[in-house]
Amino acid sequence: MTRIFINYRRQDSEGYVGRLYDHLTQHFTPQDIFMDVDSIPPGVDFVQALEDAVADCDIFLAMVGPQWLTLADEHGERRLDQWNDFVRIEICSALKQGKVIIPVLVGRSRMPNPAELPDEMKPFARRNALELSQLHFAQDVKKLAKAIQDAAPAKQNHKPRPDSETLNQKEAAIKQVRLDLVGATESPLYQFRIENRLFPVIGEGNPDANIVFIGEAPGKNEAAAGRPFIGPSGEVLAEMLKSINLLREDVFVTNILLDRPPEKRDPTPEEIAFYEPFVDRILDIIQPAVIATLGRFAMQYVLKRLDLPEKREPISKLHGKLIKARMHYGEVHIVPLYHPAVVLYSASQKATLQKDFEKLKLFI
Ligand code: URA
Image 1: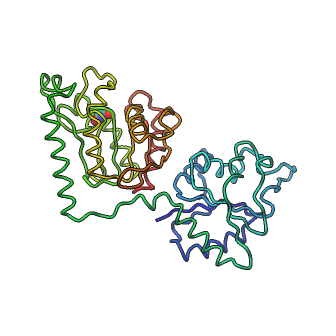
Image 2: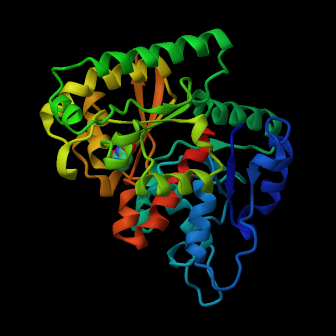
Image 3: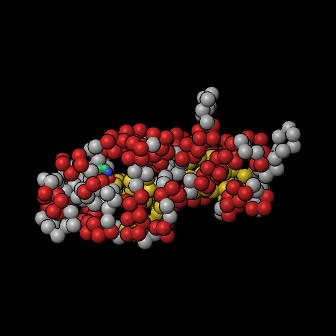
């Protein structure tokens, strides 16, 4: 399933859009093609509503007709220069969210130069466009459909369902990681575990999950029960998963530290290094298509582990982004998320966390 958003301006390209829609439905299901954001109820932040609609798509098509650049309102002010122009808001939102954007040229139009665009739209000028000509419309749409299929991020990110034997093997392999950890007396947190009668927390969930969540470290509740995210942060995580209709038993939840550190302190580099081979083994067994990190420690851990260019960026910049990477078994998407505990300290962060979780819908 590939969700396609068509951004267009009625006065500029309405006729072409109808025709394009009809042809696209021969390649994609009509429910996955969005042309108009549903009516936005009074009182709702319309910029937010448009951003959310864009967030839901895999591919963003921007229709550029002959008057795309120049259309103006009744006062002569160009539409694209107005802060509340829907076409501009949607394109800027798609740029900001790192969506695959394909400009679709119709009516013998051309791509704009950066100098002709408002600053925040300039990167749009660099997107490679596809032209739909009157004469070869059906053929051109076929090319467009192929380009959409090739570019859709979700396509490579759903694993086929495993047979029951594979599932059993994976489950057994994860149990073995737990046994190895139970006996790992050289762990920097082993003494603390034993003295306080705690359990290691290897993680839990589907051993063949499409999405693996990686948090920071088990807390008091988790280490007492040997299960991740069952305390207050776990409640927030449960709420977020529910909001996107994702069942906890369908994902796998783990941490970068698999034992509780004392006094709620940050993980030390030594501890992170000790648990790394165990976390690697878990990822190797599950082979997820998506690694969603919870909090900055888990994010930095994964970005450094995969040596990605984003590894020095702060979480304030990367949260909610989809970062493509390669594991030995294939392509993965890293999705950095704030730690659920942020909501416990600052309720206003809930909306941000919720919005970022929405990104995971692409992989469900
Ligand atoms: N916080 C985490 O990072 N992990 C847990 O398992 C619980 C709380």
